[in-house]
Image 1 (cartoon, one colour):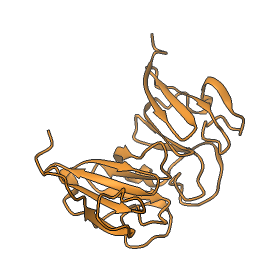
Image 2 (cartoon, rainbow, N blue to C red; image 1 turned 30 degrees about the horizontal axis):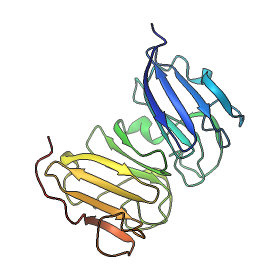
Image 3 (spheres, rainbow, N blue to C red; image 1 turned 45 degrees about the horizontal axis):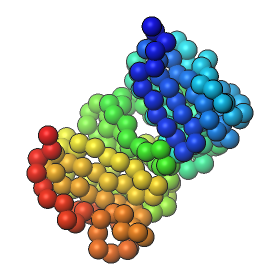
Image 4 (cartoon, one colour; image 1 turned 90 degrees about the horizontal axis):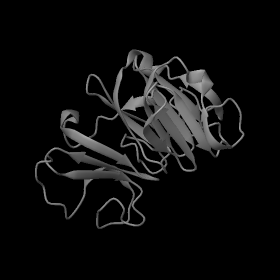
Length: 219
């Protein structure tokens, strides 16, 4: 049936569901409006996000207390916590209780989005193979030249390899890892517990290759 769920995405304490009809449902904690229901009331059962009906959503991305969903026209709709700019809405106003279209992605078409359930930052590859990042940046986890949080997706130009060779980016709580086609992994951000895979606890302010991983082309 059209209402069959085809994908799910989890934030810190909330869940998103995408059905075959291109509709999004949500449940869980809604303290920051991350359920997109127009209020801050928690939901115990999966509830249709009525404001998104008709947009034909093709992918859903929950991370931290924020939600981003992408429609068939590659427009990105944002709702939830935005105190560090993780909603990519060009401002730090929070909470965002109902879905808003992200201005940046109106003219910069998105191809792929990367984040993680516990993260408050995100990355995206654009159709022109540009890599951009936004959100909290206290520990340099966005891989740019400063540690100020970013509310407008900003190009990351400091990668060790070409973006066309990028396979995957994974966002941790305060660090980021990038995997390339040659099998090398690079890290940036908080390294208090050596989570960046280097032999120093210092914050990695620039992309640093992870130690102990054998290179080999990624299949």
